[in-house]
Amino acid sequence: MGAKFRSVFDIIGPTMIGPSSSHTAGAVAIGRAAYKLFNGPIRKVTVYYYESFAKTHRGHGTDYAIAAGVQGFAPDDSRVPRAVELARQHGIDIRFVEEEGPSPIHHPNTAVLEVSNDNHSIELTACSIGGGSIEIRQFVIDNITVQPAGPLPIIVYIDHGKKHPNAVELTGVVEKIAPFYRKQSLKGPINDIYEFDIKNYMSAATIQQIEKQFKNVICL
Amino acid sequence: MYNSIKEIVTAANETGKTIAELTIEQECQLSGKSRDEIWQRMTVNLQTMQAAVQRGESGRGVFSQTHLTGGEAVKIKNYRASHHPLSGDVMMAAVQGAIATNEVNAAMGVVCATPTAGSSGTLPGILFMLKERLSLTKKQMIDFLFTAGGVGLVIANHAGIAGATGGCQAEVGSASAMGAAAAVEAANGTPEQSAQAMSIAISNLLGLVCDPIAGLVEIPCVKRNAIGAGNALIAADMALAGCTSKIPTDECIMAMDKVGRGLPASLRETGIGGLAGTPTGQAIKARIFGNEV
Image (cartoon, rainbow over all chains, first blue to last red):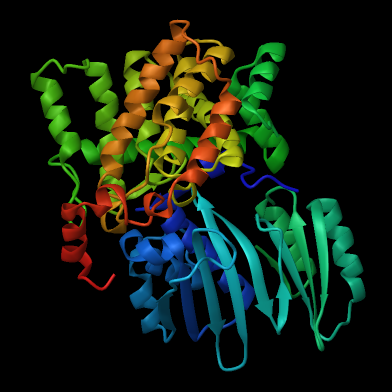
């Protein structure tokens, strides 16, 4: 199992635009995870907030933070505060729903995102654990439900048409350059999904190497 | 990765290295990045902090969109220039830097989260005061941030740094403990004294609630960074004087975790209880967002 916080820069950092690291910077990170997992033009986003997120999202700027993330912006991008308008200008229908009940994953800073276009939809359940760090507790792609350990980084591989049983080659590479503490194999009717919980943060070079060598691999 | 403050103190005593150095070595090992790369990244964080403090202290200061907060770092600056502050000029210098940073945060400016945005003023308040007081070099300032971050990682992993899970003790309380440990090291105290300062700082802010009015990071967040900075300096001075906490730091962190879990949701960043629940707090919320939220 990995620690939740694994870098001194989780504690001293990120450099960000306010006002809240958990409700703004962390929310950008949740939106970005959905953007990467969706991996295509987004037309509709529905955000369901729970507990502290439901009560304080307006004051904390959580709405524009998630909108920024689903457009792929970084937490210190100057467009972050205008991201809801920008999303709507770019034809993304984005809505925010305050849920009354408890978080489905028992964390007060929980957001569930449904992201779709005409052909494709995903669902992501994540929480913001403080200082801009997040955990991804569940996502659904192609009707396959995946429950990672939570802390990032996470590597996701979608094997379209089940052409690479058990993702042998990818597993070998990941094991070598980004050691993991858990691998999950999830079988769908048409596609398989493999998920790796990685021990330490990956360098940009490592991410680039994996994404270049393998198609349909997403590094979160 | 160091799993406790005790492990850090033991390693520092055995190797004769500072907590800053141990943290840099740990980061190299965990991230696979070079020392230069890590040093450079922390330098950028330091520059961000410095820019935020300067912005908050310049001219009339900065004001948030709601105008609930702003301009008070400048008031403190002017007061310091014309008076002898009751708690001493050094103390108010730290408070000034802390308030300046959080006023910039509330005004949607760029800050470095230390460990969070809501508590981003505490550490710079202490650091830029110490820079003048102890004539710190740039290297010593960056070491200060590594020390603070190294001990902060233990707090984050064993108690938490989110107001929604642990109350403000997890944010300003953590920042204050980190600052206390780093201030001791900057003043050439021992690793054990850094740990004692952390224990004292945590103990003194145990139970601090997170009660933001209208769910904004303004009232009381901005001024709570003043107590974070002040408490850190008091705790650091007490530890340097040889005072001890009696309760080991790791147990103080455990207590902080348990207290946080025991806080009702109304006092954990929901904008319901505490100051947010006062008639004036509710009236401010209604004025800003209407009654529907």
